Image (tube, rainbow over the protein chains, first blue to last red):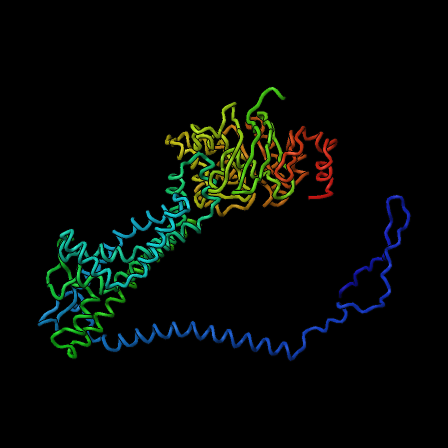
Length: 327
Length: 253
């Protein structure tokens, strides 16, 4: 049972005990806009809900297309290439003019090139971003540098390959080698890493910087001990994007680091290597038996994708652990 | 009370680009006193506070004219080391801003960056500071836990402990309780009362009751000018200027 609430008697006593009349509610005469507001008509309400459903449906469709595209690609590769995957495929060098055997040298080569590219690009990229975001005073110089970085991002990968050939391979006399290939790939990933690092630095609240400086820390101590640790998860995201792109590229390495065929595994950074993307390209366009090696081509593509996903996964796990530590 | 001066501003002008945010401020701060800076939003009180430890240096287009002295030395002189200045003039910010580190590391941070490596000393100093900031009992069992897990009021007291750890001489507080609930606010105010025995405290506040409760001296800012400064009791009971009276009685603001 609910008790009815006591209704205020519309009067109250002041301190002296006199009764004060509550202000009377004015008798209504003129209808105001408030009174005439008709509310939402059912037809209009149905229509706006329909419009909302249509748009949400479109967005859902757009998102689904992304997922479907990925699934189709993976299905296509697995369907055509699963027969090629075996233990020998992963652990043997190619044999019989690359129509049989495995792709171990390509796996090792791609790992070397990607890791090399990250080793080159990550420190330089992070350092550049720190300079641009934390040290440089906004002005002409910074605008010019930014323009350069943006243009670097738009340079086609084959141009990077030619640059690497001319500069690292020929002028610096590195020859076709892991070093030259990694430097070329590194140069290509720089804009991605700089951009994402800058974004990560921007997302660190200024209050952290102020708190640190307010305690008598230098600018560098502030960056090293407070800003960078907070930005690290974001920086890693950039590194993931950079390395993913680098690992799958063919054009930058075909003149600088990767060769048509070498059964030897590299023993120094000045060795030439085979690489997965270039191997796919070679088998599919210039191999001795293009049709006969189709399954090997797809198999190699599967390995490349798994490799890239694997490297991404490592970085993602690392990032998640860093984030947890920051909580 | 007028004889000793810890900090002093002399004909201080401050510009954000073309905009003149402070107009020839003259003001003295006595040691071991709490000074409250009050005034409506945008009146320049926070800008003035941030001039006192040169935090405004971080704004590229800002410019300062005039002098601010700490123990008689001009802190804007060219040979002054800003890093050392900020160690002497600490700051507590409006929003609690602990680093995303452990409670211990937050307080120890200021010691580490100032080159103190002695572990025992750091431990003692951290404990002392947390006790001074009246938060030791709440955190002593979880010093290694993340500071971000504390409540807003606890975070702010942690930030005060962090500022005290490096033994500043002056503590600037920029609306330190404005993001906190009344109970946390009360704790911070009690804390300020205790801290003024050791430190010179300058606090910006929007809350006039708070200014009246915690401060010895109150300064009223309006439109970038220092309108009136004096003993808090006098400012709140017998202000000399009409603008001050209008503000503290709530007629504008």
